[in-house]
Image (tube, rainbow, N blue to C red; front, side):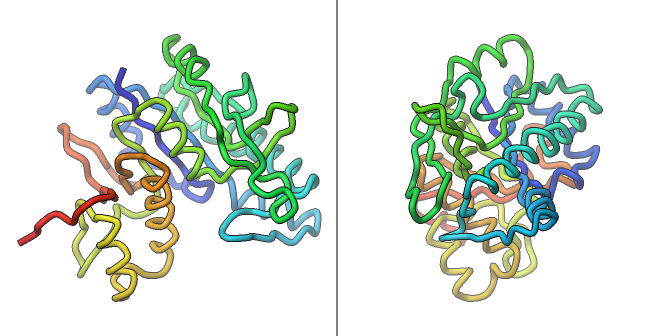
Length: 258
């Protein structure tokens, strides 16, 4: 079975447009099974602000005490997931919302409880559970909330969660959906960039601003064992006539572009 894992950040869900969903239909026609993983950072931060809780981050990971975990799960499962599922259903995709802790889907362990609180790293993805959903013709839409062997829920970085799901399913592609078409170098969309090229272009200032965390997230995924990650747009067509439109980030030697 051919899988595509699609990671949507919380900030891009409201910006998804009809051409994006047309590309999803094209992928399905090519025989791909779709699996979504999503974040919800902006919505979580708004709710934390209402509770007068200041967000804290350590090495890019959200420090998560018990109150923050409760708020994060409430927003991810009760708001952001519902929003993405509804959007997919609006375009006639049979979306099935899942909390990552349901059915021990995302099994996780604490990273560093003292430093980060209730933040986890995935130890195993319940592949059989996902296959059960997919084989019944649904599209899983997963929150990055994991669970450990003691039944404790853990907050997981959505990029890492998507990477682990892609690895478990041996997905042919892992997509990181953004609000731009991909990475532009010298004014032109780059179809692919090696890990080494990404670091070089960041140092030169060719990759800058909001694109830096996007490519870092893609690099983290390939370092976690995903063969490559495509940075694609949620606003435009990213797959048409069997061709990808976006930037592929991969490990290995740069392609000779001469």
